[in-house]
Image 1 (cartoon, one colour):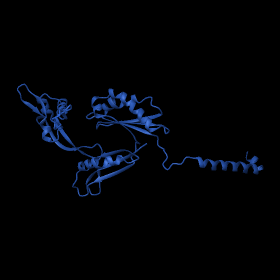
Image 2: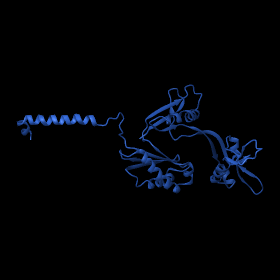
Image 3: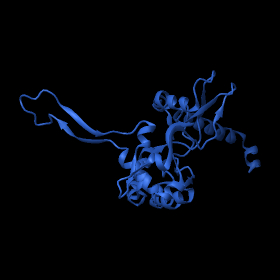
Image 4: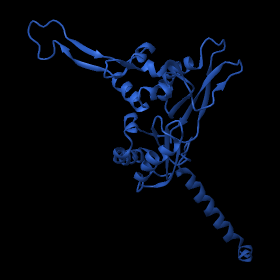
Length: 297
């Protein structure tokens, strides 16, 4: 073949010029993008099952959701994780030519069909579906140089003043804040529970019932008379906010009329909620929190 072109140089040059012209013409019509889509789109499903072990979450939440995701268009593979902190995450990866919006709708529809088979606690907590990659785009550390703010204070400030603003930035898929936040902690005493013939389920039920917002109606509700001057909503019970209010939660009443309250079987305190992620420390030695950003697919 090489001898054929060596003996016919004019023909070889003609072919070369034609190839060059075709390449120049093709360059003008090639699509150009500053940030082309390289990674395939991914949809993440997050669920929470408070108090459950990793095995329980795997069997009753993760596997149920995974089984409902079969048959999705252009689905390449899925990966999942279940942690002992009560959280489950399932990531579904689609082919590069898949529309992320359509993929998210299909995932939400499939998840809706599986919602009735999830535990009641998971249904009450709710599940989230979002478009995002599995990696972090940026990590930012917040800290108190003079040590006047605790980790929980910084976390509360980040949640109330920073998280919503960052999440609205174009290109940000999700914002994750690692740190310890304030929570009402109830430490049960097994010996006292046994003496009163109570179980942790009884305590959980009493707290859920009595720590709720209840309304009983309105004063001057519709239809109002001509002489009606005011309209007010009557609230019979509101959410508990102080340690003393939680301590006074009524657990049960014995036959002799004696009452068992939460303070009799548990220790209640407002403390920082332990985080499953190692805290971040700054150069000043004060504890802080890390804010991570995940980009959209």
